[in-house]
Length: 253
Ligand code: ADP
Ligand code: MG
Image (cartoon, rainbow, N blue to C red):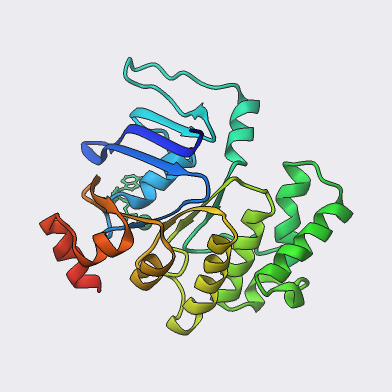
């Protein structure tokens, strides 16, 4: 079976601090995986390893069936050709906690940038597709606004449209609603819920337990750089085996 993402034995240290202690993960196409866990447990670092923003000290990450990443067991960095790496990266779309929109570009400008610069689309084509995506996230009416004129929820919906414009095969979300005022969380989760319903493969780091329970096919709990529990939402969230997972969930539920 061809997996969307497969990670084997991923380890990452910063200095003496081992942040990821040998993580294995398989995500199938169409699957929605929610990653939960206390702050500092390595969730962002793991996403960054999957997305190649961070190079693991050991292990492998495959995306869409091909190897992506490095085998450092022998202390040797086996680099992949740049062209291939670029292709790999566009298979993954990433949405960050703090939006990371280009401040000096309009909403439309933000969404067409990647398709034009990286994928080589002509402006007219890129704009047509961008407007469809902005419509999908309920932001078509704000195409000519600048990020500073938008609420956090609106910015995040634009950021989602921008990631989708690269036509990634997998969408990664790193706490997409953690920086939002509570009343703006729902509109972003609604967009994500619709993506999930449409069959998008998603890995979502979140503290939104309700979203995980409702939308995730599978939930994974990370604590101190280890995967402590993984399974169906109802099993993991209601009846976890691991005592540390139980303690963590009792604090956030
Ligand atoms: P989470 O997303 O679960 O809150 P992170 O992956 O951000 O956790 O961080 C896990 C640990 O790794 C934390 O102790 C953090 O301070 C440390 N860390 C993350 N990135 C770096 C870095 N670039 N340099 C040093 N330490 C880092
Ligand atoms: Mg994080």
